[in-house]
Image (cartoon, rainbow, N blue to C red; front, side, top):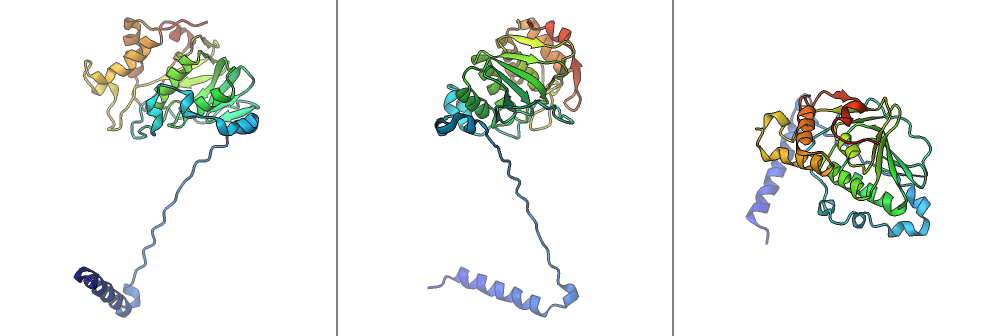
Length: 263
């Protein structure tokens, strides 16, 4: 039995069809809506390196304790990010994992942004190349997902990796937190460190919040975790937030040495 609602819908459709059929040609308008889907592809050359063992890589399991990896981080919560005009050439790589390029058994170079996928790419890289010792941060603009950025930073510290900004290298925005995560930190004399305020998904920056707001605790806690005492953590945090989100303040190797030890 046909419901009254179905009969009503049929009558409405028929009426509209009749109206369009008898309307003047110049009064008819066709509206075309075009949608575009952009798909990002990730070519993991490590699967060629790993051979038959590649299928066994468990990216999430390589970062035990980070439950946030089970779900995609909130892309709306963009925090610390400064765009880069171009990425530096990182040379021939044995394998690539997102922004990471494995150069040899002990060295990986990094160039590019941190996204929600980067912690898992890092985990897969460590699973495939467990002997890695250092990250050369060639051109690192920052993070598109700050939750993922801090997960990655702590994973770098847990893995016992050294972080290094080579000659001509640049780390900016959230990438500075990644450099701070190294168990040993190195930087060439001309290395640059770009800092600025974070901005939340509502467009509010750090200085828009009261000094005693809990929102500041996350960064202060992280800086202390990476070896700064409370005074230095607060001073560095204030320094970064003295520059608006849409600008960058560049610091030198000597500037960074005021806050953390460098080798």
